[in-house]
Image 1 (spheres, rainbow, N blue to C red):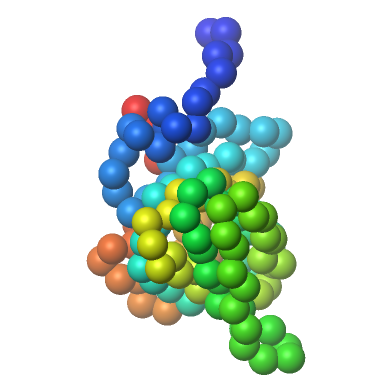
Image 2 (tube, rainbow, N blue to C red; image 1 turned 180 degrees about the vertical axis):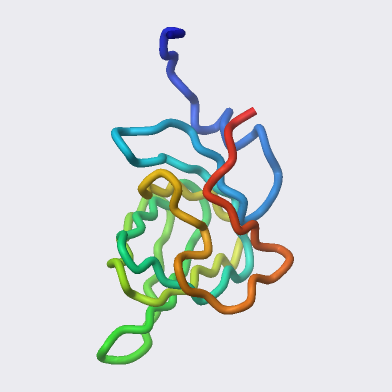
Length: 131
């Protein structure tokens, strides 16, 4: 086993240019720590069995939520965190180029368990390795 080394998030983010295409930075227990560059709209989707954690590293992320009380949007400026509860339909949107960190169980699809049609600019993946 190779010794672990620190990973600079700035270097991880500089290693790719694709939008809505997360890279796995490391794994903690059975969870992937992913970073992504995002801009524009993602798609409405839901993760039936897991929460989804967002941390905004740069930029601003909006997350539309469809909840029992109705639809609302949360706004996450740089440095903010938010967890979308499992089973909540949501649609991320970045009005400006934004960098985010996500924490999800390994193997979780970026488009959830149920979703609308996947647009060409969204990578339906369980995350890509760095490099």
